[in-house]
Length: 147
Image (cartoon, rainbow, N blue to C red; front, side, top):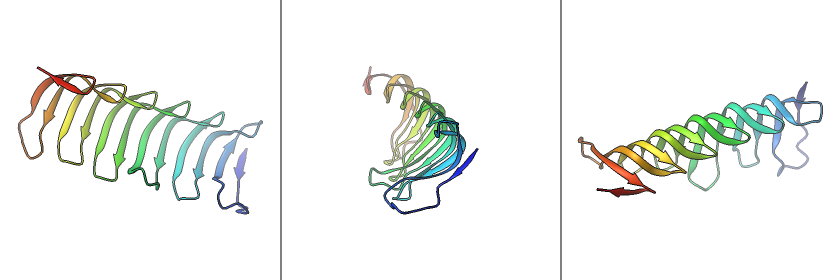
């Protein structure tokens, strides 16, 4: 069933256009657009992003968006997150955190490619300092480099 909300009586209310299930939840493919211009376009299951989707943010938190896999409304699987300062992460996600193998290019020009756990560098990875073409292999524990 296709559901289209076109009545903008409340401009502060997110608007959804897409499939819904018998209980009125977003379910299938659709786009949810927020009043600030942020949006999620992708697949839904029982009201939550599930499967592949694209989140575009227009809020003041510095985040530009995420394209990738979702599970129960959280980034989960493989995806790419971009920030307003030019930073970008390509890699694995678990429960809305960078987790597994991934590459993070920081806004400063530094790059880390390796293992992540709970949103921080954790495990073995390669680190390139800004402007340095040579990588240093290091072990990281809770975002701290250990020798």
